[in-house]
Image 1 (cartoon, rainbow, N blue to C red):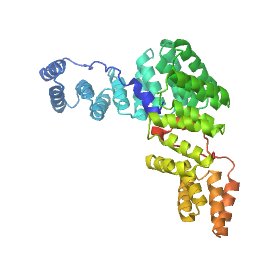
Image 2: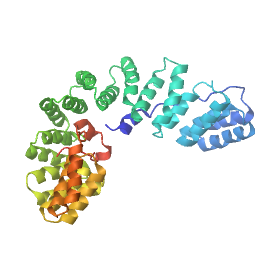
Image 3: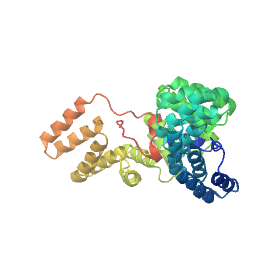
Image 4: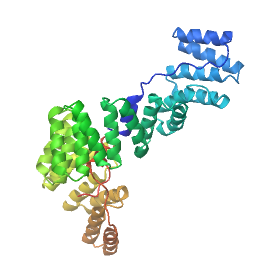
Length: 384
C-alpha cells in the first residue's frame, strides 16, 4: 500500500454544513436556495456576488467554500475557507473543511494544520483525529501518524483499513513488532486477508525471519493469487535466499498479472542473468528500463551483460548510469573498476576501487523498501 493510496481511502468524508454568523440577507437566502436545489454553479455565482458586496462576511466565504468543495473545485474552496478564517478564526467547522479541501487534493502536509486546529476545537472528534492521522501518513511522517491511528482504532476496533494503515506505518519506521500486533488482529477479524498475510511477511522479513515471511506470502498467494505484489513479494524473498529458479517463477506470475511491473521485470531479468541466461535477461531488463529509467539494478545488470559480450562502451554507459542513480552501491564501483582495468584505464580503475573500499554500507533493500517504491518502480539497491 503506497502512501497516497492509503491516505486517499479516507477522502469520502462528508463536508460540514455551511456556517452562518448573522441573519441571512436576501442574496444569501437565494444562494442557499440554489444550493439546496442542487444548482451548484448557480449557488457558486450567488455566493461570489455576496462576497463581492460584503467582503467582510466570513460566513459567506465559508459557504462559498462548501459549494466549491461540492463542485470538487478544492483549490478554490481552500482559498475561500482561508479568507473566511482570516475574517473570523473561530467559525465552527471551517478548519475541518479546509483540511478536507487540502486532503482531497493530496496536499497532506497542508492539511495537517487545519485538522490539528479542528481537533483542538473538538478533542472528541473522531473524524478530525482520523483525518489528521491520515494526513501525517500521507506526508510520510509515520511516527506522528501512529498515536492518532491508535486512537481511531480504539474507537473502531473492527476497522481493517485503519489497522492495515497502522501496520504499514509501523513497517515504514521499522517497528516490526508493532506491525505484527496489528496483523494478528486483522487475521483474527478476517483470516482470509491476503493484505494481512503480506504485511506480516514484510514485518517478519524486517526481523530477519525470512522462512516465516515466505510462509506468510504463500498463504497470501493461496488466498488471493491476483493480489498486486503478492507474487513479487514472495519472489523477492526467494531471491534474497538465492533460490533464483523459484524466485523467477514468482516474478513471472506477477508479470502475468501486471505485464509492465518494473520490479518484477528487473528481478526476473536478474535471476536469468545469475542463471547464465543472458539472452533471456537482456530483453526483460531493457523493458524494465523503459518502464522505469531510474532503475539502478537493471542498468547494472545490462552493463554486466555488455561487459561479458565485450562491448565496453555500452557497459560503461550502463555502469555510469547506475553509479549516478546509486552512488553508494559498492558493486557499481567495483564493476566500473574492473571495466576500466580491462580497457587499460588503470587510474580510473583505481579511483573506482577506492570508492568501493570507502563505502561501508550499501543501500537498504528489504521487502518493505521494495513494496513501498512508487508505481512498481525499483529503488536503488546495493544487493547483488
